[in-house]
Amino acid sequence: MDYITTGPLTAEQVLEKAIEVIDARYCAGATFTSSKSTKDYFKHKLGAYEKEVFAIMFMDNQHALIEYKEMFFGTIDAAAVYPREIIKHALKVNAAAVVLAHNHPSGISEASLADKQITQRIVKALALIDIQVLDHIIIAKEPLSFAESGLL
Image 1 (cartoon, rainbow, N blue to C red):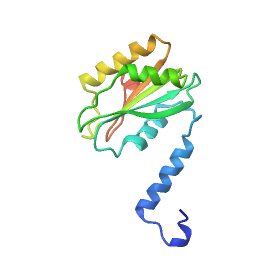
Image 2 (image 1 turned 90 degrees about the horizontal axis):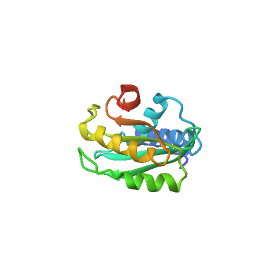
Image 3 (image 1 turned 90 degrees about the vertical axis):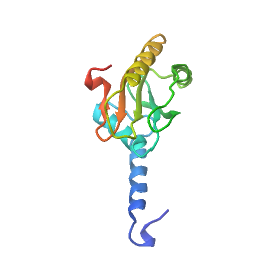
């Protein structure tokens, strides 16, 4: 849509344009080398959901994005996550590494026992096929990186 001829942009139009810019910046092939850029990317993708969504960045061996995929959808405080489905998709796209993420609609960034347990199950499952889990990020008011927090 061409906003130039329609007058001043609404707040919603500005946000739509910002999303377009972020999506273009982090298209397939973009390299994620810092926790900050990864957290920013996931915050953009998952921050507005009112229910838990578990998403994964599938990456090559240089940590370039192959695909971003929202894989599991839940309720306001939980989402069922299946390592088998993650493995199937990782093999399909020939991923060498992944970054896991999910949102906490409550805004609380603390990792629950269930978050820690599913992360370890995924790490172990993917290690069997030589796919590295680089991080698990919880998107909340203050995003939490498992790698930075020593939880991974």
